[in-house]
Image: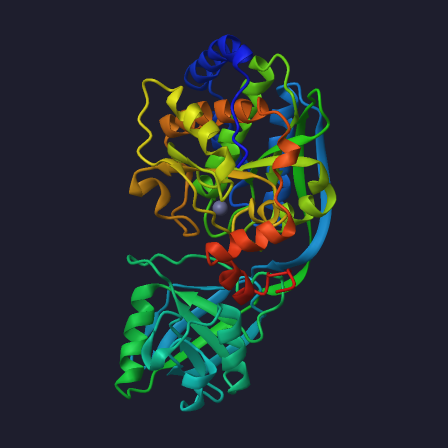
Length: 460
Ligand SMILES: [Zn+2]
């Protein structure tokens, strides 16, 4: 196994550089103010929306004020425009529901529909239930009848094939929260209109239906699928080599929230790291590219497009999605980076990393397409109080949840890590071959997840 050590001759200089970076993250931070402006002036940033276009301008202006030349890469993709959705129980009692259309749900005219509970929504369970012309209540996690949880999209398709008019999922969290999300991963329109309702509403309707009580819901939705324009924003710090280390965070969010934490925090930390590295890295070995990705929430689309275009020149990727106070670094299956990562954490003498170096690759954030190309990827484990991260995708992910100190913690540690990765020689040799990627995915059972999502593009 190839072990990686940092170049010792640079160590003295590095110590000084490291201290400057860490100090600046606390004493000169711009992350919080930048994020406040982003939230106040652009609001939630659903990909393709007017808000999102405003956000791009704010990011671009901030980068230009730091002296960066900014590149904006535009792409088209199948998108989704939220309209109004309304639903209330009309029988056996009147009650307004806390409900939202799921991303990629099509519109439906105001209709009064009887509810039917169809368990996890697999075809076996549905077979025995009359759901024709009804609204299907689906609990993906209902394990009854040995149900193997289908994807949301497949459950909707099954309900459609059984004659359902619409489907309703329950939110996962208590307290009236509704977590906005989409129906699938590839921009396909939902087979029939699909909604998500607060867990408490879902539970009470399902309980009545299971007892044989007829529940009728009046429901409507004016959302629609349509082509949208998305854009990745890139700020480039040239190095001795044209090969790139990508440091990224998605700036899109769901629209019912402000996306202050998911992933405004990642955007803010990325901005501050871009500032610090420009100021304190006198020269970098690799080109460092800071990328604000679009449309992560709609299926990592910005990151996928980036990879299609530039992945050949990328030698490492560091992704930040809701960063907390760093507790450890995940080397994502690249075991050969362990000693380097350990050495890095040990260089913070006054800091306790409770998770240390972890090697647990995971998917479904922007590093995924890079990982699937065999590019070394890194993410950080982080701590945040529950009130900070708990509301992601919900209405209550708002700027008041953001903790200034956590942004500085993440900026200090992750910013320093970027420069540590930059010190590693021959990063381009660390890329995994396709066989090795397949082996890595399979050893962590990520192939199963990717196949279910129809995102496994390898032969076996
Ligand atoms: Zn996110």
